[in-house]
Image 1: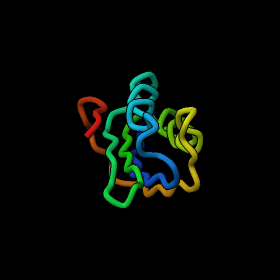
Image 2 (image 1 turned 180 degrees about the vertical axis):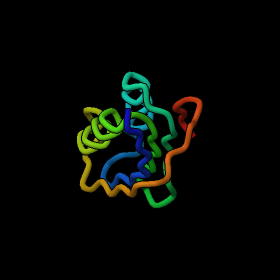
Image 3 (image 1 turned 90 degrees about the vertical axis):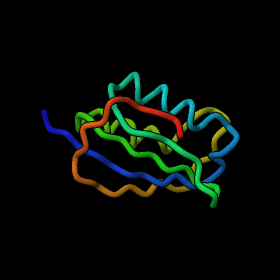
Image 4 (image 1 turned 120 degrees about the horizontal axis):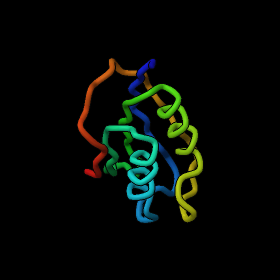
Length: 90
């Protein structure tokens, strides 16, 4: 099984629309670890680590987000793999 970690920054209408909670729910369903948090500049930061296919599935989902979100951009960088315990909302 190939593993992968990505740090993604999501831009658009992504705060105050349940984006963090929906991301945590999706990540948990995919068996991904990491975190999601709001940034002061109104973006959302997402760190995801896990099986490559699951991480890529979540990355693709970030372009959609929950129903009320309006995503305009998702930028991701690959990081060294980190073995984290769970997925949390910060």
